[in-house]
Each structure stands twice: as C-alpha cells, then as structure tokens.
Amino acid sequence: MKFRILVAEDEEITLKHLVYTLKREGYDVTGTKNGREALEQISRDHYDVLITDIKMPEMNGIELLEKAKEKDYEIEVLIITGFGSIGSAVEAMKKGAYEYVTKPFDLDELILKVKNIQERRILRKENVALKAYFGMNKTISIIAKSESMQNILNVIEGIKDSDCNVLLTGETGVGKSLLAKIIHFTSRRQNMPFLSINCATLTEELLASELFGHEKGSFTGAVRTKQGLVEIADSGTLFLDEISEMAPNLQAKLLKVIEEGEFYRVGGTRAIKVDVRFVAATNQPVRNLIHEGRFREDLYYRLNIMEIFIPALRDRKDDIEPLALYFLQKHLPKSNKKITGISKATMEILMHYSFPGNVRELENIIERAIILEKTPLITPGSLPQSLMIFQIETREPGQVMTIDELNREYAEKVLELVGGNKSKAAELLGISRTTLWRVLKEE
Image (tube, rainbow, N blue to C red):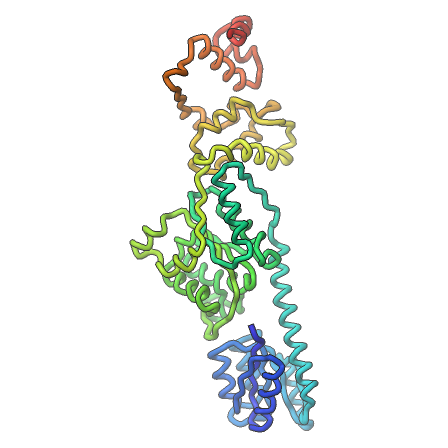
C-alpha cells in the first residue's frame, strides 16, 4: 500500500508545488488549504504523515498537531515554519512533531525527511511482526499415516503459493489448530506473524476489542489506544478458531476486512488498511447455522474459498498407533521414567476405542498412562477404566475361538495387565503358576 501524506498549507502555490513533488516521488498525497480541512480529512481517512505550515488561518499548525494526534496517535507530523518561528517549531516537537523544516525550504531536504519517516514506520511495523513471529511455537509435528490425512497434506501443499482463505471443519480435537499452523508455515507468509484466537472463549465486547483493537476512551477502562490482532497480523495469518461462535455484528466487521482490507478500531472513526490471510475453524455444521440465521452466508463463502474436512480419529485408525507412540515420546522426558513402548494388549484396546475426544483425548490418555505406569511398557492397567469397560469384541462366524484359545488369549491379556508378573496373573485368575504356564503353552 502507498505511503499516504496529507499537506496543510494556506499558500496555494506552495501547496501545489508540494503535492506535485511528493506525488512524483510515488506517494499518495492529499492537499488541504487550512487546518480545519486537514482535520476533517484525518477524521475520515488514514494518513501516515501530516505536513503542515505552522501559521494558517482558522487553525494554526500546533493546534492541528494536537488535534491530529488525538484522532490518530500514530500519525507523524512534519512542521513547516519561517525563520522567525523556530521557537514555535521547537514547541511543536515537544508536543509530538517528528521534525521541522524552515522556509524557504529545500525540496530534496523535505523529501529526505519524509523518507526517513517512512523507513522508521516500516521498521516499527516489522519489529511488531518479528516480535509476534519469534514469540510463536514453530515446532510442528504431524502424524499422517492414514490415506485421508495424506490427502489433506497434499491439498495444503497445493495451496502453499495461494493466499486463499481456508475453512477447517471437523470434530473437536481432530487437529484443526495444528493444520492451521501448517497452512501458514508452508505459505509465502511463513516469515510473518501467525496469530490465533478462540472465538468461543470471550464475550462479544472482549472479542471485538481483541480482534479490532480500541481507541483511548472508547469504553470504561480503555486508558490507551490498543492494536487488535487483525492489525498486528497484517501481512501474516490470523487463525479464528470456533468461528461459528462469533456474534453476527462481529461477523459483519470481519466480512468488511476480508472484502475491503480495512476495519475500524472500537470507538475509532478512521479506516485502517490491512493485508491478512484468514484461516477459520469450526466443529459445527455451518450450513445449519446459516439456515437458523446464526451465521452469515456471505461470510461463509468468503472464508470457504478452500474447505478442508478433517476426519475423526476413529475413521483413520492407521494414525492411532503412530500418534500414541509420538505422544509417548513427547511426554516421557518430563516423567523421569524408563518406559520403552506400549504393550500389544494396550495398543489393541486403543485401536478398538472410538475416541470421542479424538487426537486430543488420545494425547491425554497417553500422558495419564505415563504418570501411572510402573513397568517398562504402557500396560492396560494404566489406561482409563472407561476404555476397559466398553471393549466389545466382534468376530465372523468362521473365526469362532475354541475354549482353549479363549483361555490362552484371556490369560495373555491378564499377564499384560500386570506387566508380565506371572505370580500376580495366576493369583488374579485363581490358578497356580504351573496351570498358567500350561494355559499359555497350549496350541
């Protein structure tokens, strides 16, 4: 976006000369004949720099400086003054002016000062972006052994050179936030901020302030102007989790950002331009919400340029074992335990569980098991009791087991449950160690 400059100068020839010269340098320039007109422009639109003569009718340059800073504290002000008014120019700098030039001024000098202001603003903006970037956790690991997850990663690979908005759908806990990070860190915006917010955790007023920021005094407690996530994420990606929980009037403001690339802070009167890519997520059927009038259809289609559905973990069982082993390695270091793996019986239980909480629930199960386990392998006894109670075994008619086979399989499971302790297993089964040995050896 072009660097925008507003010039306030009551001498018509000087005003035309300044506007022409600055436009020739590639700036977006607006000229006004006095302080009142300039203030009206600042109230209506955003400008990066105000160049103002210190002596003007209706409103002088110092008054304009003060009122302009009240409306937009970020605007930089360059004062034009005569030799006899240098004291006033120094006063203006104490009140927030960037610098001053004296008449008759050298146009090259003025252009150089404008370029210095521009470079300073760019550095400030990049500094904010870098702070956000380096504050992020960019360590991303994804387990995608199943065909469905491989297909999703192929889609993400296919859109890495696109800035299209993405809507992620699927049950809670399937990994939507992780995929949002992968979308960002494989895109052209990967070196710029990735910010996220859960729309379901804040009230409408707080969410508005977090997203769009607020002006000083816009509500009780707004003691200073605050940038919102939309503004900070400029040139990067903003992840909106649980987008379906956003209030309708905030949906309208978000739609304006997507369509026009601009928004207003809470209590603000001027538009702020941004370039943000949006990745949104929901676990609800959005079309039903649209039918009920709870979600804007136009916003849905703006976000749904690319929709990616993430299947539930129970529908991609090939991912369960590698995920379980990954979570074991992830949480094991902080436990100070020497667990080497997950037993066959435990893995069988996990493979037959429905995981209503999806990947997040699996991680919690493994983390809990590490805490409880007292043997070198994660055994069934360290799993939540609910997983043991609701196991249902199904077999085809041609695969019916004999009594001896059932006894041996059950004995093996009990042995796994107690970590291979044959005495304990025999005690639980109500048989001797010798009988247990015989049952396990029977073919």
